[in-house]
Length: 139
Image 1 (spheres, rainbow, N blue to C red):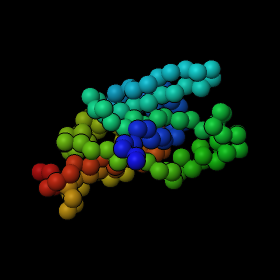
Image 2: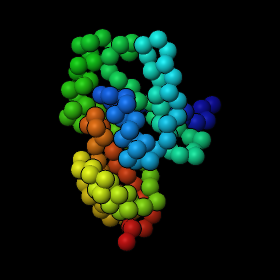
Image 3: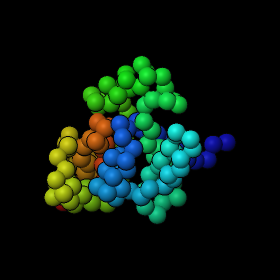
């Protein structure tokens, strides 16, 4: 029986840039950062959580041939690949913090819905991210 999702992956164009975004801007923490030959296993996770890690994968060897890697990079640039949904206890506060830090790649400002408040943005590689504050819409 499966009991837990351990790791999920997203493609990024540059692992160091992605690490800076997810840790430096969004406040996640670095999980694993292991070099094995030319391959770097790099993950981030919600701070203090013993939950799922997000593997930051670059298209290319050893995972893909160059033609496939280029196709993936093109899809990333369009925001056409899968993204992430993260939870926050203060979506509006996070929005203001990101704006104050100079971040501008929002796809939706915080909006109230029946399920809570959420916003949309894109990471430096073009991946779509939704950040959700569940429950009654935030004030």
